[in-house]
Image (cartoon, rainbow, N blue to C red; front, side, top):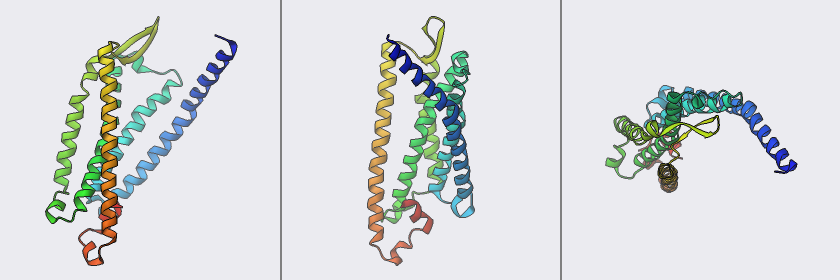
Length: 230
């Protein structure tokens, strides 16, 4: 390897180190402040009773946990504090929660989008499905499903010896399991993204329909419901 390549690698490593030391703490601070302000607004009685706000509040709590659990761990790596590379239990739990939270956040957003479609329906019976009881049920089912689905991580993620005396918390190195983990993550992310796109298109269609309605017809939705739909 030439000296120029070594210099380039050194610059990249230094850049990554500075990003972890200075940028990630800024993101954590801004993320916590932003989530706290939004939660403060949503906790007001006028917003708290709204079903969609309930979904968004749950999503904010999940994101707050992600910021202070996952991003904080990334920040500590800049100071060579990596407990997941030395503790087998922490390695499994950390990886498990990273995957679980990464899936739960878009899932809750999808449920919130579905609620907006229900409340904006022209059918009165369909709008009745937008309820806190259904929200509790759907969130519980999804959390339980993703917890079971990701349970393989607790068994197949371990501290692997990548090189001599170099340990890394990673998935089982068997080719079959690596393919399974890669393809399942890819398929899940594509499905979640595609679902969000479809729901956004339907939401845009509903907004356009409501713009053409008279003021008397719009009264079927509260002002805050219409704001959340938009």
